[in-house]
Length: 254
Image (cartoon, rainbow, N blue to C red):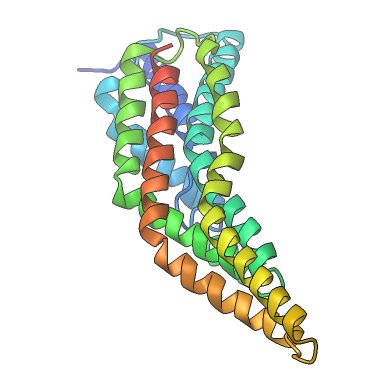
C-alpha cells in the first residue's frame, strides 16, 4: 500500500519533536563520558532513543514552518529543564569536592578529568566519577527514560508546554550549596580539630616546628575521613536525587 506524503510529513514532524525533547535532555544529563564524546555520537544516541519510542510518537498533523519552530522551542525548553533537574545532583557533589580541596590542601593537586578531558582537581574528578557511578547504581537513567516516555503521553510534542512547573528548578538549584556543604562538613569539622590541636601543641612548646606537619596531616586526615564517609555520601546522593526526581515528575505533568 503506498504511503502518502502527508503521512510521511506527520511521522517526520513527530520524530523531529521527540528527538528535540530527548536531545535537549542529553545536553545536561550527567552521563559519564558523554561530554567528551563526538557530537555525532551524542546525536545518534538521542536518535536511537527517539526511534525506540516510536509507538509514542504524537500525531501532530502537517505543521507549518512557524508552528514547527514554536513547537521545537517548547520541546527544547522541556528537555533542557529535565536535564538540568538531573544534573544538579552532580553539581552539588562537585561543589562539596571544591570545598574539601580548599580545606584539605588538595586544591593544587590536579589531573585530567576522563569525562571532559580538562585539567581538574583530584577530588573533583573523584566526586564526579562517584556521582556518575551512583547515577547508574540508583537507576536514575531508567527513571529518566520512563519520565520521557510518560511525558510523550501526558504532554504530547506539539501541544505546547507552558513551563509553569519549571519554577521548581530555582529552589532545587538553591539546594546545591547546602548539599555540598553537608557532604564536606564532617571533613571540615575534623580538619578544624587538627588545626586547633596543632595550635595548642605549638602554644605549649614553642620550639616544636609543627607548621611543616600541618599540611601533610590535614591531607591524610581529610582523605581518611572522606573514605570513611563514602556511605554517607551515597545516602546524601539518594536523598537529593529523590528531590530532583520530584521536580522531574512536576515538569512532565505540567
